[in-house]
Each structure stands twice: as C-alpha cells, then as structure tokens.
Length: 439
Ligand SMILES: *[C@@H]1O[C@H](CO)[C@@H](O)[C@H](O)[C@H]1NC(C)=O
Ligand SMILES: *[C@@H]1O[C@H](CO)[C@@H](O)[C@H](O)[C@H]1NC(C)=O
Image (tube, protein in one colour):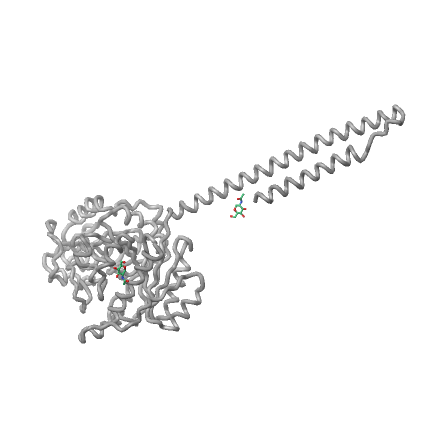
C-alpha cells in the first residue's frame, strides 16, 4: 500500500513538473519584441500563472481526496475487523467428528459444511478409527475443508469372554480418549463440539452452541451443552416452541460441547468402555447439569454400528429434528443459569396441578396450563414413563455404570409435551436426590 501511494504521488509530481516546464521554460519571453508584443506576452504569462495556480490547487485537492479515501478505507477495514471478532465473540470452537467405517459420514459432513456460518470460527476435525479405506477416501474428498486425524492404536483390545460382543464400546472409548487429547492438548482448543458420523444436524446447530457457550463458561454447575433430547419424539415436543431450552442432570451426549477444563479433569481417569454411562456417574458428574433443547438439534440416521438396530427402529427414528432457525444469540438465555432456573422453573413445576395419567390421556383436564404427574417409586416412574412414551431406561443394559438419573430429568423432574400442554413427571417437593439403585 505504501509503495502504491509513493508511486501515485510520484506520477502527480512528474505531471506537475512537466506542466511548469512547458508553461515557463519551453516558452521563453522574447523581450526584443515591440511593447505591444510584450504586453500580449505578459497577458499570456499571467494567464499561464493563473492556470498554474488552478492546476496546483486541483492537484492538491486530488492528493487530499486520495489521502482521505485511503484513511476512510483503512477505518472501514478496521471496523469490519472489529465486527468480525464481535460476531466471533472472540472464540474458535472446532467440531470433532468421530468416524470409523461408515462412508455415510459424508451426510454428516455435508450438513455441517452447509450450516456452518464461518469456517474460521468452526474448523472441522474428523477423527477416524478403524483404518477403513473407503471411509478415509470419502473424508479426503473434502480436501482442506476438514482436517483428518487418525487414531494410531489399532491393536486388539482384550475383553472378558462375556464382553466380546461389546468390544465396539471399548474401541469407541479408546478413540474418544485419544481424539480429545489431540483436540485439547495438541491443537490446544478451549472447547469442542463432538459429533458422531451418523448424526444429522439442524440449521441452527451452530447458533445454538454459539449462544450457550457463554453459559457453559459462566455457570460452574453446567458441564455440557447438548443438542439432544432423549424424549424428543414427534408428539412429545412442542413444535411451536423450538426456542425452549432446559437444564438436565442426565448427560444426553449426541452432539455436545465440553471445555478443556472438564477434559483435564476427566482425561486421566477415562474409562475403557461405556464412557457415556461412566460419565453419568456421581463421581464424574459432581451434580453438574447440561443444557438440552426442547427439540433436538441432532438426529441419528444410522442403525448399523455398535448401538442396536432395535433401539433405532423403536425410538431414535421418531426423534424430531428441528427445522427452523432460532436466533439464540439474540435471545436472553439467563433463565438457564442455576440460581434463576432453580427458583423459577422448580417453582412453576410444584405450582402446577397434580393429575393422573388417565385424566391426561383422556384430555379431561379443564385447566389450560402445565400439569404434574407425581411419582414416588422407581416402579411408578417406569410405569408412567412407559405409558407416556418416554424413555424408561436409565442406561445401556450391558454397562456396569449406574447413575440413577432418569433420562432428561432435572431434580428428578422429567418435563415433556403431551396433548398440547407441558407435563412434568415429578417426584415429591422434598426429593432427596437420585437413587443409585434405580436402573
Ligand atoms: C482493505 O481490505 C481489502 C481486503 O479486505 C484490501 O484489499 C485493501 O487493500 C484494504 N485497504 C486498506 C486501506 O488497508
Ligand atoms: C490423555 O492425556 C492424559 C494427560 O496427559 C493422559 O493421562 C492420558 O493417558 C491420555 N489418554 C490417551 C487415551 O492418550
């Protein structure tokens, strides 16, 4: 830029010098001529000087305009940089996509690339286990749009004979441990959003995480943001309320964000298997909650793999994937901070009238607002959950880890939507905490 300025000023000076040369030097006065001639020559000279002044003024004006323009441009550049960092809120969060041997990872990558608002703010890292060549080829086709890393330890994992059919879960845990170490300790990011190769994402997936990240940083009683609602089936969510978010004591996973701080705490004791049930245990959770949406921002499309196909057919297939863009970053989400939430949400739950499942099902309630179904025992919880179509399991059947937290519960309360109203399946107000023996 400096060179260009010098060049332009140089060219203008040369033009100016040539003008002076042609006006004065190239046309010397001939004083040997008659007074009349001198008179007219003086007139010419006067005119020339006038013209010269005019020309100088024009040139000075041109230089001014040029410098003004340059200054304005620079200011514009600087302010556009400011806007950019403001849009960023100064943070960069990678999306870590876990891949193994499913070429359909392209479906997930296509959607991430389609909805990603800014490649600099959300770099995509694909971590591949399994050395499956066709899948590597598919990922490589994305070129510099994604960064491919490969889990190097392909050694066999020794498991007990009765766990042979669950070996996949051991490989997944090993892969997670390695890839999260890479993300946080090698690439040195402060937070990451984890996605698996069989997930579709909603149009406002990035907007949701951008808006909730500050909550994760500010509220020490939060340890994750999840895009998933385990009870988010069509018919159990309010499709007119995609902006509604909740806290949950259950770790939902399936498109979730964690910070380096949390990983530093978990990485040294990371389990060999069933990491998601392990993370839900009180020793890891330490009474922290996640944010989850009313309507899922992810949906799984794959049924091949370690999680069983029956579960997909019976349940996952019916999860509603949000299809509207909610401008979360322009909304006040402070209602999700623990103090406010515990005061306002919990109060609303226990102020709502108690109804029975029969009354609810038969739509006989004259009152319009939210209602509550009360449970006191594990069996009552399970019975009601089953009748209502909620998830009634607490963990993977094969896993050894227990937490006693019903899916999507907060303070034992499972909130969902049923026949056009909010329903809370809730324990008594003086609830004493989760019971580890519930499973
Ligand atoms: C402003 O930025 C553009 C590209 O963003 C660049 O081409 C231009 O030279 C910059 N102008 C100044 C004055 O820095
Ligand atoms: C991840 O890093 C931690 C801390 O350096 C280390 O203790 C742990 O063994 C690593 N895990 C894996 C799977 O590499």
